[in-house]
Length: 242
Image (cartoon, rainbow, N blue to C red):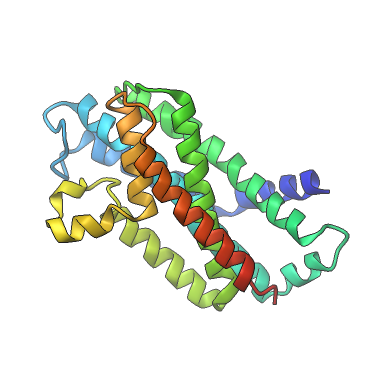
């Protein structure tokens, strides 16, 4: 039942034009635009490959944010509004099974995102380094953190508020999460706060591994783990099915 529901959730996400724009088209355009045009002063700005080495990890983090948080929050919020979650919750599929199926669908979309964005980045001259296992662990922790926050928003706010809030958070974290604008560009007090955001921890952690070839960035992983535990616990406690 979980596998069937996960396949259905994945098909629904792939058929949703607005979701595809958010999860695939926007990150790809950002990677191509900022990787080829000197719009923002980035590390390696005098070298196209150096720009892509900085951008690619941040765009991968943005892809996780767009799918696990923004897309999931919006779709779940409207399913809750229209009574879909209530009906599914009364079906033979247990409620935890429904959440598991949604998580599997998110992971399936993320695999497609990573494959596409990595291919585009490699075509632009990206030369990744580091341990693939560290990358997988960071992406998994980031997915858990953003999923918890997305479900918390979808399960406590009205659908319209979730739509506006999720898109606003996406834009704010795109600018202030170290995705395309280095955190060093911000004043020190602001940077000290931004570094504790899950998008910053994920983008900087991926950058340490994929660009600098460092080992597991345990500090960034710890930040993501705290956000994941807090977000999932809050979602489990406060999520309302109708």
